[in-house]
Image (tube, rainbow, N blue to C red):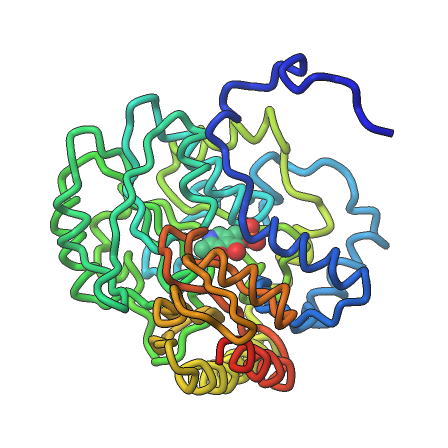
Length: 406
Ligand SMILES: Cc1ncc(COP(=O)(O)O)c(C=O)c1O
């Protein structure tokens, strides 16, 4: 039945006027519809590991159900989980975190949303390096602040440059987002760039929001953590992380924020009037993930090894396609090739694409492969492909891609 209500009569919130729905979630929806119609789509769109949640973590969630741990928990999460996260955050950053500096949220996405709600006022500016993860811009806007996008693209590549961010700092700058390893580029920000940024924000009221959700998926050894390089900036730092990517737990929805006790209290006050806390059984499962375990460490190591092999396959395959150039990602499970060489010229079948957005649609319609256009990440001329899937799928997808753009 078609609705007869006029949209204007629904009187939706003014906040929605500028809101762009998540491009990646939209694309996954379209791919899902095609698959449901029996179209054999290979999707490079998903931002999640293809591995199952490790058995020991699933067992902890099941045990929580069996033990009736299914009631409300404290707002910021059960104390055992906050203590385990504080231990993990201490190991990873070198800062001696305690449970009252941690709050647990429904995924890193909600953690970030809450952080912006807690620290931003109207007129505040939040600096976001581009290419950026899709939700930062809209989350900043939903907190009535202004996203200041700083382009890190240069020629056919990209590299985080602290100097470009520093140039854009004004008295209105409230926060700077750091996302290393990065979604969508897989770049790991090098230590000298972090040190330069630290020198610029030291002594200011600016908060660095360090989104470290991919910090266990790094391929070149030591991960340069923001707080290890700038431990004196702990009070100006909010670290966001969670179990989604490291432990293949995207659907459990557990993330956290570590930061100044007063900011954490403010965030908990918002949580107390919104989600209250993430699902109790997911919290017990996350407790197992954050409890020291040689078995889990080994699983994570093996999976990172598998991602590395796939990264090499996809980078080699993309680089072999004329018109495509591809930087080698150092972390996460995405490649972000430049496809400008495929634009404005006839592709196989005669179609001419003027933008990477059109190219992504062309690839879905003509080659049945799902990729996310760079426009979604503030970087037209690029595509994002996730290699969190089998090598066989990656190879088949690359063959289709190459054939479609001959
Ligand atoms: C950079 C980045 N931050 C945060 C998130 C959100 O993760 P979660 O699933 O824990 O909400 C994602 C998910 O794709 C991401 O890529």
